[in-house]
Image (tube, rainbow over all chains, first blue to last red; front, side, top):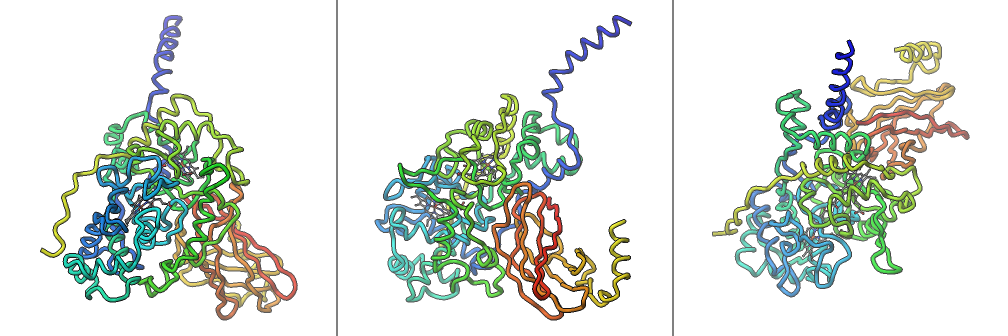
Length: 390
Length: 133
């Protein structure tokens, strides 16, 4: 009897630490919550506001323009200067560097076509409108519509690529050509879909009840994932297959740009959106049904928008060089520490904070980072684009 | 189940509402009512997805049989104390029918829909809870 008890005690002692290491048992609700982060990849993007979206000729023209420094005022900077294929379509810097140092980080362009608001402040309501901004912004490529128009008309290859994509020769209306160039750029960017990851294999196995396949995903990653969808409440904002609901939030990142100057985030973004002749309510929207402009028509400006930034997607997140809209957080470990320790006073909104200090144990932090890293995968090498009109 | 029975009893006991059409097509949707109003509504598309714009088709009826007006529609997440990032627009149709366009539930969880209706002077708010996952 006594020996049995002793044995039981010993077993318990052996089992207890092992239990902390074990993968979780998944409840129905948790399986549903994890399932919402897939399947991956989603269907290819088709943007009704852009008539060359999803067309091979539009995509080809867009890829050439993306890499072409002649799109900039001084002929030295292309989109690819800041959005580099080998750096997950970003630049590895905490903040972008244009003709002058910029105040925000260059976001990765992975999966950008699936969004509905663009830029950290959502000032763009379509991928093509967002692609106009860097071309004409004096702090970035510092170019003008007239020069873009002339380039498309006068360069034989580009003029031919334009004809194939749009079915007509580049015309005399420079602003129209600027918009069309941006639409081709958007068609190309829509094809940048991040590869499947270890998380995706696990998600499919969990939803399909395949225990053997589930076991290939580490126990630490599984606990981190459970924390992400449950106790951490991360999925509320980092929702869906891209791990973003595409909207805006305030997680307590300081928004001072310089002493006395703040980045108002979403609030300023909405002002720019409504000022833009290129928004979806304007004449360049190719969608005649009006359905694609629904968000733009109904979006409202709120006090809480001050200091809100777009919820970033988290696929390929571990491969980034810095985090948050201003690159102020250096590593994923520090991001997790931020969420663990964030002071409610730092939040700029007055509602019940969706973000509160989570007070995570070292084990929980390690697990959460392990999960976030399982959203990364090495993309296959990219072949150079074929010539536009051989 | 109980609630359904209650609604039924209620409906048949209130003859003036007998000609308030509750079926907005497709045989799906909800009914909310107070002492004075009864509102039937359904989303379009039929399933509300987190982050996806949708519309509501509504039918507003009063006990008196007089026409009532839909004056406002909104939604908030009471636990988070925030509303929607979008302001719905209301398009009146015929016979007390309305279409509210441009709603987006941008997070999973409990959303409380509020429907403001008016018959003459007084405005009344009826509410309905959605859990979106």
